[in-house]
Length: 245
Ligand code: CA
Image (cartoon, rainbow, N blue to C red):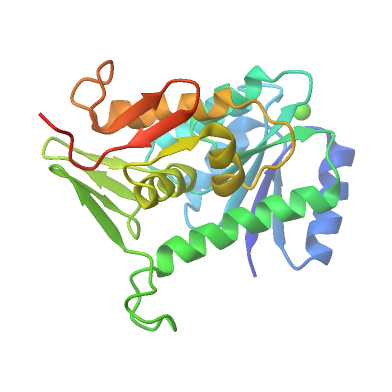
């Protein structure tokens, strides 16, 4: 059974969601503000498989909760519940370390799909190096990827450079895996949103740019002059494994 921490101050909404999530087989706990959510996650860091985090909360907001969790080294997947009329929330959420977002008000089936998606991706990432996997060696997605003097470990969700080790969110790891798969080829923002995020509706593609800025900070020697993660004007981005000097 997967455990969800629902961080939501509107009691009616929280109780309604709990009822429906429990019907779907989830184990659900509710925190009515950010402070108690952080306390709960500190006391039992491994209890929850996913956090559904409202942005608008009475004390510290959802962005601050996500930022604090990531700063502590807690990488539980976060689904940010944003306000539909605040598109900037999406960017702020990703910057704070959210893995996905859902504008309010939302339909229950969409919430379930997003939570399920995050849980599946996490399980899949954790499985990639297990020998019990039914896929043959050649079919398996690689458990790690090395370029220049950097390595992305998809099992540990880490990016290692000679200087430091960076913890990755599920979404950052997914995006890297996608870019590595299309190594050398330009990929559009729209393709990235569809293939990495599973978003087909009309979504603000600036969310992608925000991720790219973060990834460049992680592994480019000079993020302002990237050598691996290049902008392709009018198209999107291109990952280069071995830049020409
Ligand atoms: Ca709220």
